[in-house]
Length: 340
Image 1 (tube, one colour):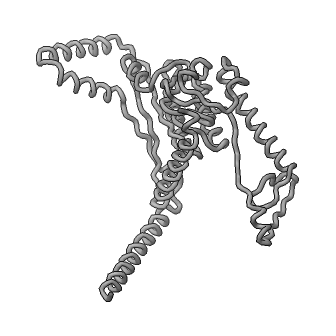
Image 2 (spheres, rainbow, N blue to C red; image 1 turned 90 degrees about the horizontal axis):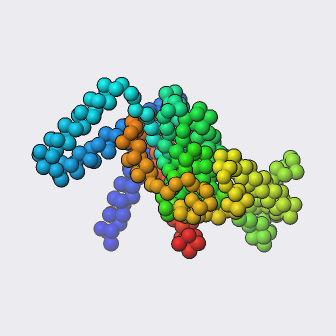
Image 3 (cartoon, rainbow, N blue to C red; image 1 turned 30 degrees about the vertical axis):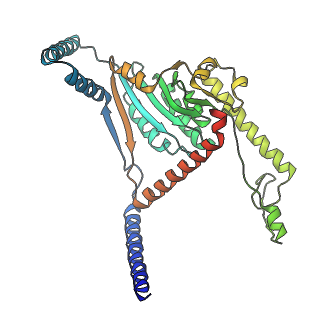
């Protein structure tokens, strides 16, 4: 028994030391990050042609004998020399990635990437966005969509590739593309608006707990979690949802006039094969297939802006990503019969 008590005391002391160290590290990181303004990130640029070339050369090295390999390299060198002699630069393709969460947090990096490429891109170039998002907050995805609209306004062709999902706010972004490509079983659509919240007013009332809420403005609060909701408040809340939905529909119709917007703006989702028939997408093709094709005739540059984050921010980001994954897992299980 004495041994167990000593061991418990040792564990408690160790835990105390570990917690103290973590607190000190967090404090130091917070002090170092204090006053450090935004814009401390940097833009990473990598040439995807080199990646595809390395894959091909590795396979050639394994499959071809020395004579064949030598002949192949000779042909490639001749083609490169001819292209250089002709002096005709290849078109450029700027490749971006957007992996969207509920808050569309990736917009922070996307806006810097777009600002950078628009400083050089012309109408002869192209932007390819590999998009994956199930949607989220209206204002977050509204800003993300506005960033993509800058590319269209600059006259630079925009191609959006959807390999897995572009629904709700995700499709709001996708529809801006001059071309929208989709994998056959990607999920698209969900052009609708949803909002929900619990109300525990009856539980509080049962236990004689009063909630006072003071507002200035008739509709400063419509539905609440703690207070008693009224029919008038519900009607106003529904009216706001309908207004947002109408704006959503008009936005999609502006960039995809070939759509029958009333037919597809029901909140439903479709797999890529069905989405093609409804003109939600222009072609069934994965991003890998499309980029491999473009690499034969253009120079592909992958852009990724990363911003330095403090230690507390990294802890918060990790927690946020974990929460998003749990919510997505729950949502998928809840709707799996509907999709599959």
